[in-house]
Structure formats: structure tokens, C-alpha cells
Length: 419
Image (cartoon, rainbow, N blue to C red):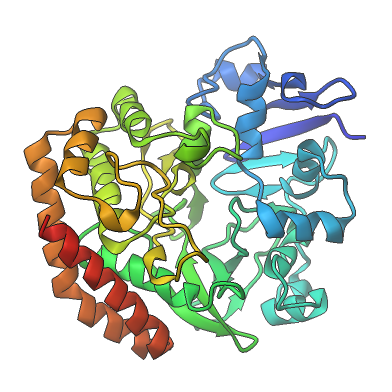
């Protein structure tokens, strides 16, 4: 059984991840930085794992690396297809070669990134060969030849979008440009809802990931531009390092919801202020909370917030992503409980002025400013909603889905603006 993995960051050897013991518990995980990496003063892997010569061990290591892995049905599909144990370390060894951001985890002696040959990058051909294209996790399975791991419970695949619109899998060592997310089989219209959330955020002036609607093998999908990429002056695409707030706060992958013991908004705000990543990040966090509440996104958890880092170690708040107005989905199919509490509101459609006051106090914002921001963004959302809905439908969004999302957002934003 594999017990040692090499970790690269920005294509350079950063250190070694190891596990000992037969139980393979969190206490058995260790990570030690490469001596040359520390001496060079290169960027730390995480704010929870700053550079040092001594090894890091225990849950802080296990939690950070396991947050790179997919969850739920997507994870189960990959484990079943690759016939590997239900073991976090084994899964990292199998698919950690290309993760979100600029980190890579590989078995010693293996190629840094095991991607398909040039004649195996046709997206539809690979999806067809995978079989069971409609099953949960089937698109993520198309990435397993690349040893690619994207965190989260939703099926997704990293692709390259060509200038002519063609989508393909990346060549060996090539950074992907987009994330392709098929519409959910369980939650019909999720693709259109997420497209609405992202487009609406951009329409009201927030920094959010760009996305467009596509169809792949007759299945609706959302093509999201990767925000963890940067293009140099010569046109070369470079990876940026990323860690979500569960990683940055040291929480395990299974505790992304506050009700289950995960991070709350006060902790997220304290992290942004402690890292001194700038007033833009403090404002961005507030806008994420307010916008998510206004559009009825009850799934705004800590893994949907991330920090970006460049090769010089500079960190900033990532653009907003995974902005799904879950309020359009019927109960009890989807819970209305906010993933992170806003005041004492038990439901995302019951947040009021008193809850915003409690949030402001706990997260370190001035109450009048928070209330004003709620009113400002609610007004912008209501002004932009119809136009954004038309655009999404013109791109191919299903009218009945888009109209249901629009009605849910409008009702919630109007209610919140009047309280």
C-alpha cells in the first residue's frame, strides 16, 4: 500500500506527504517541506502549514489534503471505477496529479501529470468510451486518465476551450482553462440556476467567475472559466494556487456546514482580516454573504470561498463561484437552512434586519453599512434580474427553469429589502 507521495507547487518540489501505521488515522499523516523549497522562501502550501524545516503532522495535514478530493457520489464513482480502497491517501495517490489551483500530488517516480496522449483528448470520444454518461460522477471519470481531482460533490471535468468553441481534454502538462459541469440528474435545472447566479453577480458589479451554457453529447452543461489561472503578457497560461476556507481554517472536508461543526462567518471574516489580504477582500466577503442571502443560496458554505496565491506568495480573495439560488428547489428536496448562520435566521428566506445586525457585530462590520449594502444589492438585483434571465434563455437555458429561478430570487430579494 502506498505510504508516501511527492507534492509539487507551481511545478516545483514542495515536500513529501506520508502516512504511517495500520489504521491510517489523521494522527498518522505527516508533511515535510523540501529543504531547498524552504530555503528559497517559496509560497507556503497553506496558511495552516507555513514554511518550516520541521515536519507538520496530524489532522492539520490530513484535513488540508483531503479537501482536495471529490465528495459524495462523484467520489464513489471514481473509487468504484479505479477499484481502489475507500482510503483518502490511496485516492490522493490515484487522482491527485492535477488538483484545483497549482498543487500536484504523485507517487514517487511517476510522471508529474499523467494526461492523455494527443489523440485521446477529444472530449466527446472520451466521455463515450467511459460509458454510463448519465451516471453521477461519470464526467469526473473522464478525468481519471489525467489523475485529476476537483473538490466538491457535483460532477465536473477540467477542459480546454479552444478559440473556435471546441472543448477538449488538456494535453500533457497543459493547464486547463475551464470547468465543465453537467446539469444534475437529481436537481433538474441546476445548470440554469447556477448560470443565473453567476451572471447576476457580475451584472450587479461583483467579481464572479464567468460562465456560459453549452451542450455536450446532448446533455446541458455549464462551462465555467477557471479563476485559478492567469495569462502572462506573451499569452502563456499559468496556474494560481488556491485553498478554500475549510483548508485555510484547518477544518476537515466533511465539516463544510456550520451546523455540522464547520466554520461560521465570524471565523471567515477573522481569517481575511488576520491575513491582511486587503479591504477589497473584506468587502468581497461581505458582498458574498449579502448576495447569497438575497438570491436564496442556502448552500454558501466555507468550501465555496477561496484564497488565491501567486508565485510570490501574495494572497487575495478568489472571485465568487458556485452561486446557486437553491431557493428555487422545492422543500424538502433541499434544506433552506443557511450553510453558515446569518444572525439567528433558521431559513435563508427568513433573514431580517435583526439577523444582519447580529452578523455585523460578529463579523466585524458596521451595522449601518451592512444594512445599506443589503438594500443596495437588492435594488441592483431586481433591476438586473429580467435582463439576466433573458440572456440565459438566449444562451439555451430552459425557460421554465429560468423563470422559476427568477421568481424565487425576486420574491426573496423584495422581502429582504423591505425588512
